[in-house]
Image (cartoon, rainbow, N blue to C red; front, top):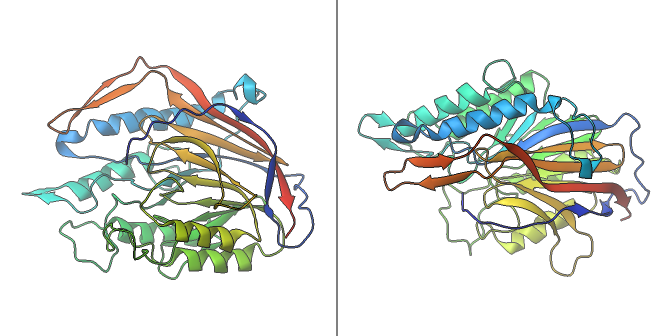
Length: 353
């Protein structure tokens, strides 16, 4: 994950969403009340760097306690509902294919990931279901030869098959990597490292590790089949967002065009920093609300979509400073206090095609 610091202020404004695809205003479902956690870039480590995982443990314990917290007063206060689940937006482990001597770093990192994140809220430290995707640190596609005995993408496919078997998913791609699900009438779509079909010819990064493997085609089909002209809220998520050169601006525009007929109320991603932004391709008036999740060691976003209102806040470790040492270990200063940053409240209003 690249460290990009960004100062963003509290955003309280009204939002005109993308089109509902039916030419009519989408009416909020009376029973719509979806709360969930979003985080990214946990970068689980191993051996000499395993102390890093303790920082993730602290964050997971705060996630587990979040229903005992209150929303910040600037967002209206009140109790935070129990989250439906946690989305983890890639770079789950730090080394997707690393073996040094008799040390299989990838296997140990994945073991640490499983111990803390689990799958269903009963088999790890985390007490909620987790929905992960992969990032640039998580290793190559399953078609590539690896040194490690563990392939993150292969394991993720197995986990997605279990999610499907348990009835958690609405749709799963043929390659087992991209998927969607519904909480109330909110449709969420997980799109891997970034939402394109293949790496753009002008992108210089490894085409093996950073192959999006048909994510855009999956999205087009998924939205047509499972959202259609309903106008219901759509949440898009991937590892990389609209502030990085890891995928091309042509692909950003192709994504926007593909989702234009639908009521996209939120885009979630990680990879580059923490903060809020409104984004649309140049010349487009209707912007998408975007949240960059930062990294799990520092905090997480709690998000609620209730009726016609979206609100979110970044629950973070106050005044934490982490220094990377020459030997790849880390020194951390933190006094144990949690606070709030990057607060957002917006009305969800469906537009017209």
